[in-house]
Amino acid sequence: MIRKNVIIGKINDSEPSIRFNLNLNCTKCGKKVPGGMRTSEKYFGSHSFKLEVDNFKKNYLCGICRDKKRVNDKIQK
Ligand SMILES: [Zn+2]
Image: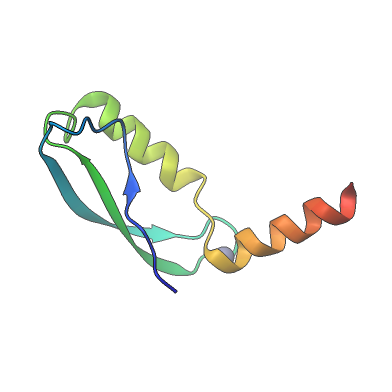
């Protein structure tokens, strides 16, 4: 499975971007997943950048849990 880098904030085409890795834990099963992320050079390390990363981590689900959630959502409808 090919995983794309998750983009934090907005990157304009003309802006240089930075790639970085986050150690993510699935909020449901606790599985550790290395996260390939991307952001703009300007945004990296800023206050709102940190908030967004925090938020992303808090809501992170691994691929398996995300699939399960999708299935459950379908059943409930
Ligand atoms: Zn999980």
